[in-house]
Amino acid sequence: MNQSCLKVSPSCSSASTSVAGSALRSCTSCGMHQLCLPMGLDVSDMRRLDKIIGRRKVARDDFLYRIGDRFTSLYAVRVGHFKTYQENLDGDRQITGFQMPGELLGMDAISTEHHQCDAVALQDSEVCEIPFAMLEQLFGQMPTLLRHFHRIMSHEITSEQSVIMLLGNMRAEQRFAAFLVNLSSRYAARGYSSTRFQLRMTRQDVGNYLGLTIESISRLISRFRKQGLLVVEQREVEVVDLAALKKLAAGVDVCAMPKPA
Amino acid sequence: MNQSCLKVSPSCSSASTSVAGSALRSCTSCGMHQLCLPMGLDVSDMRRLDKIIGRRKVARDDFLYRIGDRFTSLYAVRVGHFKTYQENLDGDRQITGFQMPGELLGMDAISTEHHQCDAVALQDSEVCEIPFAMLEQLFGQMPTLLRHFHRIMSHEITSEQSVIMLLGNMRAEQRFAAFLVNLSSRYAARGYSSTRFQLRMTRQDVGNYLGLTIESISRLISRFRKQGLLVVEQREVEVVDLAALKKLAAGVDVCAMPKPA
DNA sequence: CGTCGTGTTGAAATCGTTCAAGATCTGTGG
DNA sequence: CCACAGATCTTGAACGATTTCAACACGACG
Image 1 (spheres, rainbow over the protein chains, first blue to last red):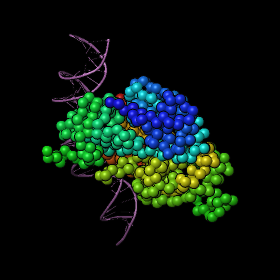
Image 2: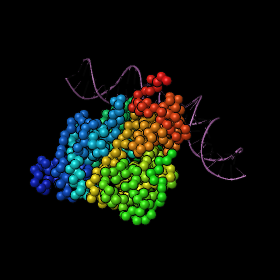
Image 3: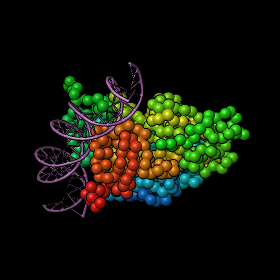
């Protein structure tokens, strides 16, 4: 499955002085720019932002950053997927989020200037590295950028509140349904299918994130499959009945009301 | 127990050349200013910030704002305590946080311009209302203010990650211990006792926040009391063995290693 | 072809919930 | 000051959702 950022036609055109190669990697030509940090910027501002951004590849299972690393940059996922997790003193981990193209990583480090979680690539990935000190410079000159940055941070807060909601008062079935619905809508927002996608993370990761064991995830998948909600083959998922999943996620008991055919 | 910042006199008019009354309600004279939004500002900048801030009282059990309300202002708790919670379609609630003096409320609303949670006063309280559009104006002129604002938002993100950690992979005993330790250190940071404080929320609220039932909370309190970790009378809590609570919160089994006398 | 990582499934165990009863506290009004 | 009602909290016993433990299946890879 090809989920590369640049599935679109690379809008080469007028990338000022930029050579073809670098134009392809610029914000203006990135398929995620209407979701990502440069959202709403005009072309000239986007170019200014571009100038401070570096690109970096991260191989599968490699760290983008680690707990305790000094914070210097935010990262935008360009291609691929990441997971972030915290670790307690026992070495137990808790995945706090999965990040996909167009999403920002590292905002939790601004406060202490040290990263508060590990960020690991779930597949070979590529990020845009945004030096925060330079970004702050731009904030003074580009109010639109600042406003959008605030929206992104705010959105991060609400996403985490949703996870708190999920962990705090949903049962296993609801959690997993909510997880799938969440992925579905995020892929939809990126122009991918909302009903067919790959789980980029292991069942272990899903379970950890949802506060459940791997066995529970496995059982839930089996159950959803038997109920005709999903078709799953390995990590490939096809959501057959998204509406039912949404109901489940909202707490409506779907199996109590089986559909006719 | 008196934790009032300035339960004192109501403010009289004129802000700029501050009369006694209004000076008492200004940031410069507020005991929380080194924790709150104005942290690090010099006196003249603090006064400029002050000018855009309004004060508002919220009676116990009253809403500061409700889900869906249009977002116009952030709020800093000046006196009292608040809880924020989300509600799902079933009407189930999940408390996402408790806020105490010097803490900011409403940042989750920046993204959508509508509040994403209800905020309720746990006791008669007072907040500083910070019109966000005006605050954005100041950001352009006061880089220190902007930087601190980013730190605050970032800190909000890390706090929520801690809650995710708590809900995702701690057992009941750990959760409650972590909760008490968290309160303890936040009170300490405000100059209050880290070992004696009042729970401003009901057991119901504590349970909801921790993803546990009220009965579980009750049993945990009893157990901790029997183990000599706490003395509890109603909502008044004395932490007798903070170190042990910290160990418990970190996942070390304290009752497996009972202390001699 | 065997091994390792990953995922599935069943049975037993466990932690926390649910249900139920009683205790304690608070505030109100006589 | 007491009696009473309603809220809040505590405690016990049974239940149940999820975990734990264990065995097995499957696919990838050397």
